[in-house]
Length: 157
View 1 (cartoon, rainbow, N blue to C red):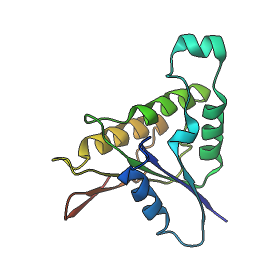
View 2 (cartoon, rainbow, N blue to C red):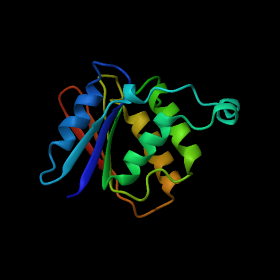
View 3 (tube, rainbow, N blue to C red):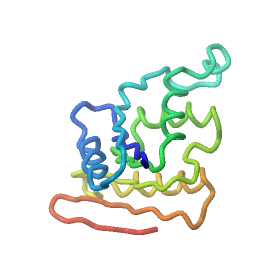
View 4 (cartoon, rainbow, N blue to C red):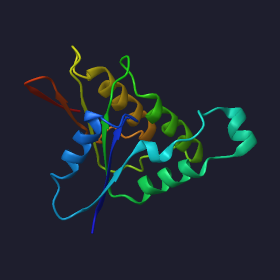
């Protein structure tokens, strides 16, 4: 059976993006779903010095292997000051040290929701650019759902 990994890219216990990732994963029938909580993968803030002294944290290796063993990935990004949360960025920094390719050309659903004026568009644009750069595939399809207070905008790249 296919396995989807979903998570909200936030460490907030009340994150609407965590709930959004769970909702999105429940739209898929006939697949195993694994919902991750970034709080289960807390580790030191990435630095070259820490990596050289202590190596890659066990939490990073675990997160990396979970993604690698999945058949699809759903991420709902919280937006902090127009960018990723520190929690997501730190995990991404660590797992990219294990291997530069962290998404393995897997189908991905990138989401975000925010009540901000731009409705999390900035973080989705950033995620799209970085993930495309990371996997270096032009033909990869991404679906961005941006929920604003009462409307939904869909953009396909």
